[in-house]
Length: 38
Image 1: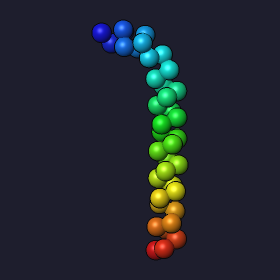
Image 2: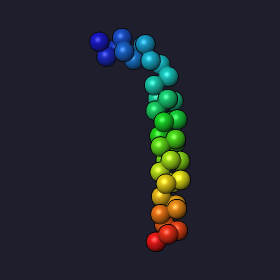
Image 3: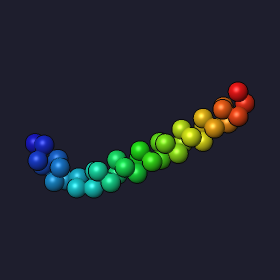
Image 4: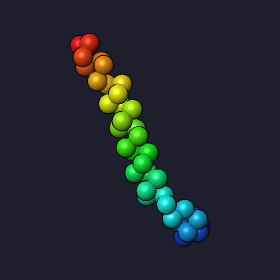
């Protein structure tokens, strides 16, 4: 089952990397104004 899943989604690592970078970007965009206010 795991092999079939990994075969179906060969781009999973790159997608995860893109999602992680987007998450970091959103976190920084939200955290920076808070830091400036405090």
